[in-house]
Length: 388
Image (cartoon, rainbow, N blue to C red; front, side, top):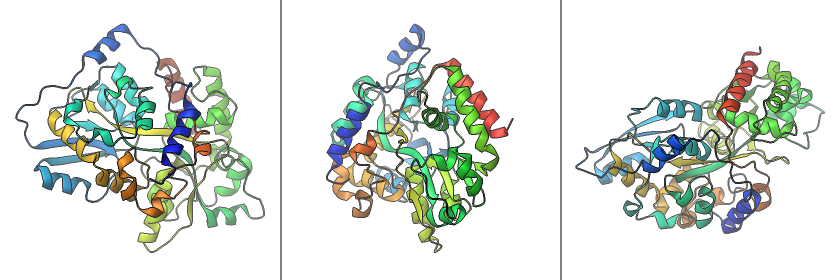
């Protein structure tokens, strides 16, 4: 990370402190008790196996091989492309996984549901490498940082193929608010010619859509979602696809020119297009309205069978060189203060990866809504996708 990183994180805290990183609703005494009593099982003579469930395209090539070589632990590594998929698997119990990587607001839901177990920090000798500002922010959702360790963080925004967008818009200038590129039919009607893609995740799309129409990003008012849906319905005919796991390849291959997605993926798409010898001028835009911040976290499911191995892997990731390797490979910021010197200079100085403090302040902080609102959100998103 670059030298202003400390100030960036302080800016982040100032920008979202007091908002409380809204914890989820519908808590009950029973679920709270189950969360409090879910603690790490004592380590026995575990078999040398570790089962991990993480986001796609979220590793350096040598992360797993180096861990396996050093420890003799065989890793089974599966991927998902939305928090909704991961949450459903945890709710079904008997996941078969020892580490999963939900975003922090979803991890809060899982803590309250008794689906996770506490960390044994005595086994995390590299824990001191984490930036205190990151830990302080995480504590808003995870008091005492008892369950979560940040993997990487970024934000949801608009990504574009600059050349294709300019060609599609013709004489029309770029909008002052880049969210118009995906939410305003004046622009989407032109950009559909080169392809528009949205994340296939209601909890990623609706906070931004709500803010765009002047409503609270984490509203629990069903009428607010109706307003946001009506805005989205107007651009639905212009959207080519919904994808959370395929945007990197779609942008890198020139199949789409505009995406509502993750900033880290847009930087990765540009790099991949260069590697594929078909360079695309892809940019993650820093919007005047701001995007949606997320922090993806390593947590241990309550039913994990290889808890000691899970701690070994988390501790391995917290090594400065390893965490920096993740950032260099996937262009997402990491929370490891000691990793700064190992991050490639080009990545360290990329202001769409390590946002300036004033842009961090504009981001929508992670948050949750109550269960009734979540059902409303899901229903409207399904209507949006199907064009109903």
